[in-house]
Image 1 (cartoon, rainbow, N blue to C red):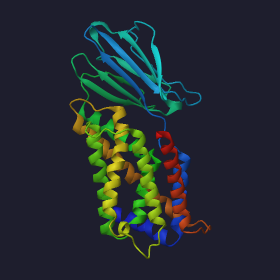
Image 2: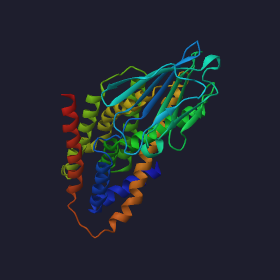
Image 3: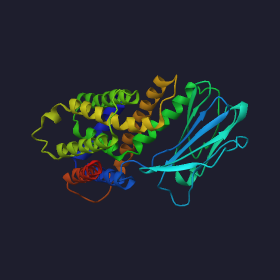
Image 4: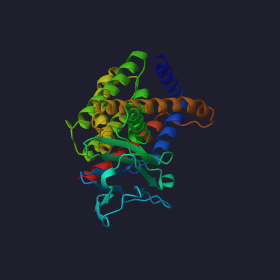
Amino acid sequence: MTTTWTIGSRIRRAWRSGRGTRLSIAVALLLMSASAQSHPLAPALLQLKELSSGRVEVLWKRSALRVPGSDIQPVLPEDCPALGPPTFEKEGSAVFARWQIDCREGGLVGRSIRIDGLGPARIDTLVRIELADGRTIQRVLRRDEASMVVPGKASRWVVFRDYCAIGFDHILSGADHLLFVFGLFLLCSGMKPLLKTVTSFTVGHSITLSLAALGYANLPSGPVEFLIACSVLVLAVELARDEEEPSLMRRHPWPMALVFGLLHGLGFAGALREVGLPSGEIPMALFSFNVGIELGQLAFVLGLVLLAPLLQRLPIALPTRASVYVMGSLAAYWVIERGAAII
């Protein structure tokens, strides 16, 4: 609690002195350059479904967009020959390939699976394996760990590690979520409102994330992403208002954070829905994904604290409202772009 309050206080003091302008603009520009789409290329998916006969149905899904110089491909066990050429189809921005392999009586357990080309692409691959006895195994392969041996059952530690990493990566690659978190710290004044606001946002997105991941709140991703952009724009407008006449949102920011947290949770669930939840370890997967999101938010705020002293030494003086205008302009761009996509 003390750490959170110290972080928020330093940012707000820099803001009121005018030095926060440079910090805010730098953050907004970094987020803009990171991704105008707010999210990077979707992870690839390798799905293996083991049949009783020893045959395995293979589904390979990847983005139609490619990083120059890279071509990620799955490498399946050598002693599991393909039973025919793959069939291809394209759906939106994704390309699907389907075929079958024959692993005979031994099945997939104990065999090695690898993804080639992850280094240049920097795209994670979600591996989902359904064994013939009904067990489901979920793993995430990255460039620093591009292969795996199919275990009989995934341990809880593996589930926690993988889903925590997915949550951490998702929040840090979502410019809209990070910009909203940054705005919350600027909006609050005082330890009690700050604590309530951050807690409300966390509770809100945890509720809808769990409901959506369990299938109780399935909404199309297009409208959800549009409304998330609107939430950033609303917060930017509020920050641009005259602080000498505090509005209801400034006096009681936590209800707004709770409502918008519910909305952002649906956005987080989109990433989790792509991965799926491991059978028998659903509570652990949800918990660790939430932990990853919270760790990502904390890392982002700590990065602001480390960056602020450096930016405060710059001899450039800028209007205080300029930072909010950058934030609002970026949010307005997302609103227009995502609104046009769902019309």
